[in-house]
Length: 106
Picture 1 (cartoon, one colour):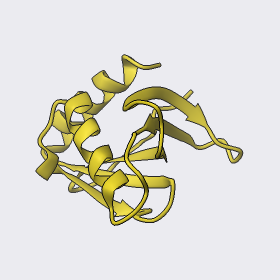
Picture 2: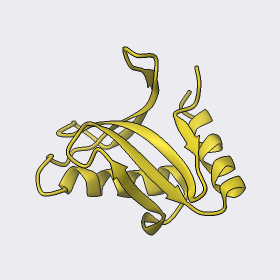
Picture 3: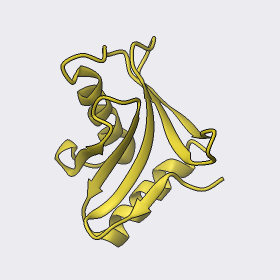
Picture 4: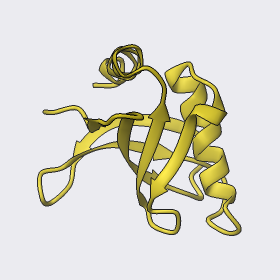
């Protein structure tokens, strides 16, 4: 299974599948969708209204990845369950940080 990341000039884009209204906040692991694309599966207790689930996602991912919330930006999927999150920073350092965190849930 491939890691759900794409390296860009700004940092790393992480592909996420978000489930709001969950019983607890957690990173579940990596799964492939019907097209064979890998996504990090994340659950949050927040409701999907007025950006609450997105804020909870950013908070959970910042702890999971060990980075600041200000380094995270939802670049697509603001109102969709499938989201692309850009983690800004030095490309090599950020890639290593994300890969290390993802390997813990594989």
